[in-house]
Length: 386
Image 1 (tube, rainbow, N blue to C red):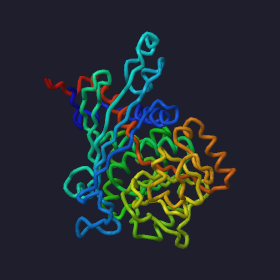
Image 2 (image 1 turned 120 degrees about the vertical axis):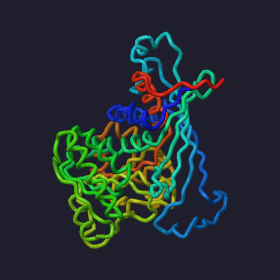
Image 3 (image 1 turned 90 degrees about the horizontal axis):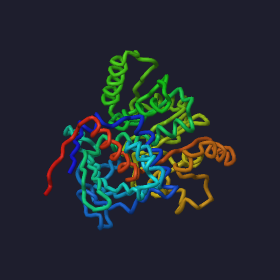
Image 4 (image 1 turned 135 degrees about the vertical axis):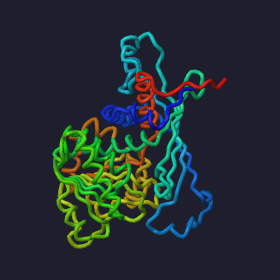
Protein backbone atom coordinates (compact mmCIF):
# COMPACT_ATOMS: atom_id res chain seq x y z
CA UNK A 1 0.00 0.00 0.00
CA UNK A 2 1.27 3.44 -0.94
CA UNK A 3 1.10 6.00 1.92
CA UNK A 4 1.34 9.73 1.37
CA UNK A 5 1.37 12.14 4.32
CA UNK A 6 0.19 15.74 4.43
CA UNK A 7 3.63 17.31 3.94
CA UNK A 8 4.29 15.16 0.87
CA UNK A 9 0.84 15.92 -0.53
CA UNK A 10 1.64 19.63 -0.32
CA UNK A 11 4.85 19.07 -2.28
CA UNK A 12 3.14 16.92 -4.91
CA UNK A 13 -0.04 18.93 -5.49
CA UNK A 14 0.36 21.26 -8.48
CA UNK A 15 -2.14 24.14 -8.09
CA UNK A 16 -2.44 24.69 -11.84
CA UNK A 17 -3.12 21.00 -12.39
CA UNK A 18 -5.64 21.19 -9.52
CA UNK A 19 -7.68 23.65 -11.58
CA UNK A 20 -7.56 21.37 -14.63
CA UNK A 21 -8.52 18.26 -12.66
CA UNK A 22 -11.38 20.08 -10.93
CA UNK A 23 -12.77 21.11 -14.31
CA UNK A 24 -12.47 17.52 -15.57
CA UNK A 25 -14.20 16.23 -12.43
CA UNK A 26 -17.15 18.62 -12.65
CA UNK A 27 -17.61 18.01 -16.36
CA UNK A 28 -17.55 14.26 -15.68
CA UNK A 29 -20.81 14.65 -13.77
CA UNK A 30 -22.57 15.77 -16.94
CA UNK A 31 -20.79 13.56 -19.49
CA UNK A 32 -21.51 10.51 -17.29
CA UNK A 33 -17.88 9.48 -16.78
CA UNK A 34 -18.02 10.35 -13.11
CA UNK A 35 -20.18 8.32 -10.73
CA UNK A 36 -20.80 9.57 -7.19
CA UNK A 37 -23.03 7.38 -4.98
CA UNK A 38 -24.85 8.87 -2.02
CA UNK A 39 -22.56 9.93 0.80
CA UNK A 40 -22.89 8.58 4.33
CA UNK A 41 -23.14 11.22 7.06
CA UNK A 42 -22.68 10.96 10.81
CA UNK A 43 -23.23 13.98 13.05
CA UNK A 44 -21.06 14.61 16.10
CA UNK A 45 -21.75 14.22 18.93
CA UNK A 46 -25.50 13.88 18.41
CA UNK A 47 -27.28 10.84 16.99
CA UNK A 48 -28.29 11.77 13.39
CA UNK A 49 -31.42 9.61 13.71
CA UNK A 50 -32.82 11.88 16.39
CA UNK A 51 -35.32 14.42 15.14
CA UNK A 52 -34.48 17.06 17.76
CA UNK A 53 -31.14 18.79 17.51
CA UNK A 54 -29.51 19.29 20.90
CA UNK A 55 -26.68 21.83 21.28
CA UNK A 56 -23.41 19.96 21.73
CA UNK A 57 -22.03 22.50 24.20
CA UNK A 58 -22.57 25.92 25.67
CA UNK A 59 -20.64 27.36 22.73
CA UNK A 60 -23.01 25.78 20.21
CA UNK A 61 -24.87 28.98 19.36
CA UNK A 62 -27.09 29.93 16.46
CA UNK A 63 -23.96 30.97 14.54
CA UNK A 64 -22.27 27.58 14.82
CA UNK A 65 -23.04 24.58 12.62
CA UNK A 66 -23.15 21.04 13.95
CA UNK A 67 -20.07 18.89 13.36
CA UNK A 68 -20.25 16.02 10.88
CA UNK A 69 -18.17 13.15 9.50
CA UNK A 70 -18.85 12.20 5.89
CA UNK A 71 -17.89 9.07 3.91
CA UNK A 72 -17.91 9.90 0.21
CA UNK A 73 -17.20 7.34 -2.57
CA UNK A 74 -16.67 8.03 -6.27
CA UNK A 75 -15.38 6.49 -9.49
CA UNK A 76 -14.28 7.84 -12.87
CA UNK A 77 -14.82 5.62 -15.90
CA UNK A 78 -12.35 6.61 -18.58
CA UNK A 79 -13.25 6.15 -22.23
CA UNK A 80 -10.75 4.76 -24.71
CA UNK A 81 -8.59 7.66 -25.82
CA UNK A 82 -8.74 9.74 -22.63
CA UNK A 83 -6.91 7.62 -20.09
CA UNK A 84 -4.83 10.56 -18.88
CA UNK A 85 -7.83 12.96 -18.49
CA UNK A 86 -5.63 15.71 -17.02
CA UNK A 87 -5.05 13.73 -13.83
CA UNK A 88 -1.33 13.20 -14.16
CA UNK A 89 -1.44 9.56 -15.23
CA UNK A 90 0.86 8.19 -17.91
CA UNK A 91 0.60 10.52 -20.93
CA UNK A 92 1.94 7.79 -23.23
CA UNK A 93 -1.02 5.66 -22.25
CA UNK A 94 -3.22 7.84 -24.44
CA UNK A 95 -1.38 6.61 -27.54
CA UNK A 96 -1.86 2.99 -26.50
CA UNK A 97 -5.45 3.36 -25.29
CA UNK A 98 -7.06 1.58 -28.24
CA UNK A 99 -5.34 -1.61 -27.06
CA UNK A 100 -6.32 -1.20 -23.42
CA UNK A 101 -9.50 -1.98 -21.54
CA UNK A 102 -11.30 1.09 -20.22
CA UNK A 103 -9.59 2.30 -17.07
CA UNK A 104 -11.49 2.97 -13.83
CA UNK A 105 -10.28 5.22 -11.01
CA UNK A 106 -12.05 4.37 -7.78
CA UNK A 107 -11.85 5.59 -4.20
CA UNK A 108 -13.46 7.39 -1.29
CA UNK A 109 -12.85 10.21 1.14
CA UNK A 110 -13.50 10.38 4.87
CA UNK A 111 -13.90 14.05 5.79
CA UNK A 112 -15.07 15.79 8.94
CA UNK A 113 -16.04 19.22 10.20
CA UNK A 114 -14.89 19.96 13.74
CA UNK A 115 -15.54 23.58 14.68
CA UNK A 116 -13.27 23.46 17.75
CA UNK A 117 -10.25 22.05 15.90
CA UNK A 118 -8.58 25.38 15.01
CA UNK A 119 -8.43 26.35 18.69
CA UNK A 120 -6.37 23.16 19.24
CA UNK A 121 -4.08 23.71 16.27
CA UNK A 122 -5.94 21.15 14.14
CA UNK A 123 -7.55 21.65 10.72
CA UNK A 124 -11.22 22.62 10.65
CA UNK A 125 -11.80 20.05 7.89
CA UNK A 126 -9.56 16.97 8.41
CA UNK A 127 -9.73 14.45 5.60
CA UNK A 128 -8.22 11.18 4.36
CA UNK A 129 -8.56 9.72 0.86
CA UNK A 130 -8.36 6.04 -0.08
CA UNK A 131 -7.79 4.85 -3.64
CA UNK A 132 -8.88 1.37 -4.73
CA UNK A 133 -7.23 -0.86 -7.30
CA UNK A 134 -10.37 -1.29 -9.39
CA UNK A 135 -9.63 -4.73 -10.97
CA UNK A 136 -8.88 -6.39 -7.62
CA UNK A 137 -11.00 -4.20 -5.36
CA UNK A 138 -8.19 -3.76 -2.84
CA UNK A 139 -7.23 -0.44 -1.25
CA UNK A 140 -3.79 0.36 -2.66
CA UNK A 141 -3.30 4.00 -1.59
CA UNK A 142 -3.99 6.07 1.52
CA UNK A 143 -3.18 9.75 1.47
CA UNK A 144 -3.83 12.75 3.66
CA UNK A 145 -6.72 14.67 2.17
CA UNK A 146 -6.94 17.90 4.19
CA UNK A 147 -4.86 20.03 1.81
CA UNK A 148 -6.42 18.36 -1.23
CA UNK A 149 -9.87 19.20 0.15
CA UNK A 150 -8.95 22.84 0.69
CA UNK A 151 -7.43 23.21 -2.77
CA UNK A 152 -10.07 21.37 -4.79
CA UNK A 153 -12.84 23.20 -2.92
CA UNK A 154 -11.25 26.53 -3.82
CA UNK A 155 -10.66 25.46 -7.41
CA UNK A 156 -14.39 25.53 -8.26
CA UNK A 157 -14.85 29.21 -7.31
CA UNK A 158 -11.57 30.02 -9.08
CA UNK A 159 -12.90 28.44 -12.27
CA UNK A 160 -16.11 30.44 -11.82
CA UNK A 161 -14.13 33.68 -11.59
CA UNK A 162 -12.14 32.71 -14.67
CA UNK A 163 -15.35 31.95 -16.58
CA UNK A 164 -17.75 34.66 -15.41
CA UNK A 165 -15.74 37.54 -13.92
CA UNK A 166 -12.24 37.48 -15.49
CA UNK A 167 -11.83 41.26 -15.16
CA UNK A 168 -12.30 41.29 -11.39
CA UNK A 169 -10.67 44.27 -9.69
CA UNK A 170 -12.02 43.84 -6.15
CA UNK A 171 -12.43 40.54 -4.32
CA UNK A 172 -14.20 40.34 -0.95
CA UNK A 173 -13.52 37.12 0.98
CA UNK A 174 -15.59 36.09 4.00
CA UNK A 175 -13.43 33.97 6.31
CA UNK A 176 -9.74 33.92 7.18
CA UNK A 177 -8.87 30.23 7.33
CA UNK A 178 -7.32 27.76 4.90
CA UNK A 179 -10.22 28.09 2.47
CA UNK A 180 -9.90 31.87 2.28
CA UNK A 181 -6.16 31.58 1.66
CA UNK A 182 -6.60 28.92 -1.04
CA UNK A 183 -9.41 30.91 -2.69
CA UNK A 184 -7.15 33.91 -3.13
CA UNK A 185 -4.25 31.78 -4.39
CA UNK A 186 -6.26 29.82 -6.95
CA UNK A 187 -8.36 32.74 -8.17
CA UNK A 188 -5.21 34.67 -8.97
CA UNK A 189 -3.67 31.58 -10.55
CA UNK A 190 -6.75 31.05 -12.72
CA UNK A 191 -6.56 34.69 -13.81
CA UNK A 192 -2.77 34.59 -14.22
CA UNK A 193 -2.53 37.95 -12.44
CA UNK A 194 -2.86 39.62 -9.07
CA UNK A 195 -6.28 40.96 -8.05
CA UNK A 196 -5.70 44.70 -7.38
CA UNK A 197 -7.87 44.91 -4.26
CA UNK A 198 -8.71 42.18 -1.75
CA UNK A 199 -10.82 42.63 1.38
CA UNK A 200 -10.79 39.91 4.04
CA UNK A 201 -13.91 39.92 6.25
CA UNK A 202 -13.94 37.86 9.44
CA UNK A 203 -15.73 37.74 12.81
CA UNK A 204 -12.36 37.91 14.54
CA UNK A 205 -10.40 40.78 13.05
CA UNK A 206 -7.11 39.41 14.41
CA UNK A 207 -7.43 36.28 12.26
CA UNK A 208 -8.12 38.39 9.18
CA UNK A 209 -5.02 40.44 9.94
CA UNK A 210 -2.96 37.26 10.31
CA UNK A 211 -4.01 36.12 6.83
CA UNK A 212 -3.33 39.63 5.51
CA UNK A 213 0.20 39.49 6.92
CA UNK A 214 0.75 36.02 5.49
CA UNK A 215 -0.25 37.23 2.02
CA UNK A 216 2.12 40.20 2.34
CA UNK A 217 4.98 37.89 3.37
CA UNK A 218 4.32 35.41 0.56
CA UNK A 219 4.25 38.16 -2.06
CA UNK A 220 7.41 39.66 -0.64
CA UNK A 221 9.14 36.27 -0.81
CA UNK A 222 8.00 35.92 -4.41
CA UNK A 223 9.77 39.17 -5.18
CA UNK A 224 6.59 40.71 -6.53
CA UNK A 225 5.93 43.22 -3.77
CA UNK A 226 2.44 43.90 -2.50
CA UNK A 227 0.96 44.56 -5.97
CA UNK A 228 -2.35 46.02 -4.83
CA UNK A 229 -4.07 46.34 -1.49
CA UNK A 230 -5.19 43.73 1.02
CA UNK A 231 -7.59 45.15 3.59
CA UNK A 232 -9.32 43.61 6.61
CA UNK A 233 -12.83 44.26 7.92
CA UNK A 234 -14.62 42.95 11.00
CA UNK A 235 -17.90 41.22 10.17
CA UNK A 236 -19.53 43.36 12.87
CA UNK A 237 -18.41 46.63 11.27
CA UNK A 238 -21.52 47.14 9.15
CA UNK A 239 -20.43 50.43 7.60
CA UNK A 240 -17.05 49.09 6.46
CA UNK A 241 -18.68 45.87 5.25
CA UNK A 242 -21.28 47.79 3.24
CA UNK A 243 -18.55 49.88 1.66
CA UNK A 244 -16.55 46.79 0.68
CA UNK A 245 -19.56 44.98 -0.78
CA UNK A 246 -20.62 48.02 -2.82
CA UNK A 247 -17.48 47.88 -4.97
CA UNK A 248 -16.90 44.11 -5.07
CA UNK A 249 -16.71 42.30 -8.40
CA UNK A 250 -16.45 38.93 -6.65
CA UNK A 251 -17.65 37.93 -3.17
CA UNK A 252 -16.32 34.60 -1.88
CA UNK A 253 -17.96 32.98 1.16
CA UNK A 254 -15.73 30.41 2.90
CA UNK A 255 -17.34 30.01 6.36
CA UNK A 256 -19.40 27.41 8.22
CA UNK A 257 -22.06 29.81 9.48
CA UNK A 258 -25.78 29.06 9.68
CA UNK A 259 -26.61 32.77 9.58
CA UNK A 260 -26.29 34.74 6.29
CA UNK A 261 -23.11 36.79 6.27
CA UNK A 262 -24.86 40.05 5.45
CA UNK A 263 -28.43 41.27 5.23
CA UNK A 264 -30.62 43.70 3.34
CA UNK A 265 -29.80 46.69 5.49
CA UNK A 266 -29.48 50.12 3.94
CA UNK A 267 -26.44 50.32 1.63
CA UNK A 268 -25.70 46.60 2.08
CA UNK A 269 -25.98 46.02 -1.67
CA UNK A 270 -23.81 44.60 -4.44
CA UNK A 271 -23.17 46.18 -7.79
CA UNK A 272 -24.74 44.61 -10.85
CA UNK A 273 -22.67 41.87 -12.42
CA UNK A 274 -21.12 40.69 -9.15
CA UNK A 275 -20.19 37.01 -8.87
CA UNK A 276 -20.90 35.42 -5.48
CA UNK A 277 -19.30 32.07 -4.64
CA UNK A 278 -20.23 29.97 -1.61
CA UNK A 279 -18.58 26.76 -0.42
CA UNK A 280 -19.08 26.74 3.35
CA UNK A 281 -22.66 25.50 3.79
CA UNK A 282 -23.42 21.83 3.21
CA UNK A 283 -26.63 21.16 5.21
CA UNK A 284 -30.16 22.66 5.07
CA UNK A 285 -29.42 24.54 8.32
CA UNK A 286 -26.24 26.23 7.07
CA UNK A 287 -26.40 29.45 5.08
CA UNK A 288 -23.82 31.99 3.93
CA UNK A 289 -25.48 33.82 1.03
CA UNK A 290 -28.58 35.91 1.82
CA UNK A 291 -31.82 34.80 0.10
CA UNK A 292 -32.40 38.25 -1.40
CA UNK A 293 -29.08 37.93 -3.25
CA UNK A 294 -29.90 34.45 -4.54
CA UNK A 295 -33.30 35.66 -5.74
CA UNK A 296 -31.57 38.22 -7.96
CA UNK A 297 -29.06 35.72 -9.38
CA UNK A 298 -28.51 33.08 -11.99
CA UNK A 299 -27.32 30.04 -10.01
CA UNK A 300 -24.54 27.62 -10.98
CA UNK A 301 -24.22 24.51 -8.78
CA UNK A 302 -21.55 21.83 -8.69
CA UNK A 303 -24.03 19.02 -7.93
CA UNK A 304 -27.82 18.71 -7.52
CA UNK A 305 -27.27 18.20 -3.77
CA UNK A 306 -26.45 21.91 -3.55
CA UNK A 307 -30.14 22.65 -4.07
CA UNK A 308 -30.91 21.28 -0.60
CA UNK A 309 -28.51 23.42 1.45
CA UNK A 310 -29.55 26.54 3.31
CA UNK A 311 -28.41 29.02 0.66
CA UNK A 312 -30.74 27.61 -2.01
CA UNK A 313 -33.46 25.63 -0.24
CA UNK A 314 -35.87 28.58 -0.22
CA UNK A 315 -36.04 28.30 -4.03
CA UNK A 316 -37.85 24.97 -3.54
CA UNK A 317 -36.23 23.41 -6.60
CA UNK A 318 -36.12 19.64 -6.31
CA UNK A 319 -34.32 18.90 -9.57
CA UNK A 320 -31.95 20.57 -12.00
CA UNK A 321 -34.53 19.84 -14.70
CA UNK A 322 -36.96 22.24 -13.00
CA UNK A 323 -37.02 25.18 -15.41
CA UNK A 324 -38.84 27.57 -13.07
CA UNK A 325 -35.55 29.20 -12.08
CA UNK A 326 -32.37 30.05 -14.10
CA UNK A 327 -29.95 27.41 -12.88
CA UNK A 328 -27.16 25.33 -14.45
CA UNK A 329 -24.76 22.59 -13.43
CA UNK A 330 -21.12 23.67 -13.23
CA UNK A 331 -20.11 20.91 -15.65
CA UNK A 332 -22.23 22.52 -18.36
CA UNK A 333 -21.36 26.07 -17.28
CA UNK A 334 -17.60 25.53 -17.51
CA UNK A 335 -18.00 23.93 -20.92
CA UNK A 336 -19.92 26.98 -22.17
CA UNK A 337 -19.57 30.07 -19.90
CA UNK A 338 -21.38 32.25 -22.45
CA UNK A 339 -24.53 30.20 -21.86
CA UNK A 340 -24.60 31.36 -18.24
CA UNK A 341 -24.12 35.01 -19.19
CA UNK A 342 -26.85 34.69 -21.80
CA UNK A 343 -29.16 33.08 -19.22
CA UNK A 344 -28.43 35.99 -16.88
CA UNK A 345 -29.41 38.49 -19.57
CA UNK A 346 -32.59 36.66 -20.59
CA UNK A 347 -33.70 36.15 -16.98
CA UNK A 348 -32.80 39.77 -16.15
CA UNK A 349 -30.81 38.79 -13.07
CA UNK A 350 -28.27 41.10 -11.45
CA UNK A 351 -25.75 38.54 -10.21
CA UNK A 352 -24.32 35.06 -10.67
CA UNK A 353 -24.12 32.73 -7.68
CA UNK A 354 -21.75 29.75 -7.78
CA UNK A 355 -22.78 27.35 -5.02
CA UNK A 356 -20.75 24.22 -4.29
CA UNK A 357 -21.07 21.47 -1.70
CA UNK A 358 -18.21 19.39 -3.09
CA UNK A 359 -18.20 16.03 -4.76
CA UNK A 360 -16.01 13.01 -4.14
CA UNK A 361 -15.10 12.73 -7.83
CA UNK A 362 -12.99 15.85 -7.29
CA UNK A 363 -11.14 14.18 -4.42
CA UNK A 364 -10.55 10.88 -6.17
CA UNK A 365 -9.20 12.46 -9.37
CA UNK A 366 -7.11 14.98 -7.43
CA UNK A 367 -5.68 12.14 -5.34
CA UNK A 368 -4.80 10.20 -8.49
CA UNK A 369 -2.94 13.22 -9.88
CA UNK A 370 -1.12 13.86 -6.59
CA UNK A 371 -0.03 10.22 -6.29
CA UNK A 372 1.32 10.21 -9.85
CA UNK A 373 3.33 13.36 -9.15
CA UNK A 374 4.52 12.06 -5.78
CA UNK A 375 5.92 8.94 -7.41
CA UNK A 376 7.77 11.10 -9.92
CA UNK A 377 9.26 13.08 -7.02
CA UNK A 378 10.00 9.87 -5.07
CA UNK A 379 7.80 10.95 -2.17
CA UNK A 380 5.72 8.71 0.12
CA UNK A 381 6.35 5.14 1.16
CA UNK A 382 5.20 1.62 0.34
CA UNK A 383 3.86 -0.49 3.22
CA UNK A 384 3.58 -4.28 3.01
CA UNK A 385 0.05 -5.12 4.17
CA UNK A 386 0.45 -8.86 3.59
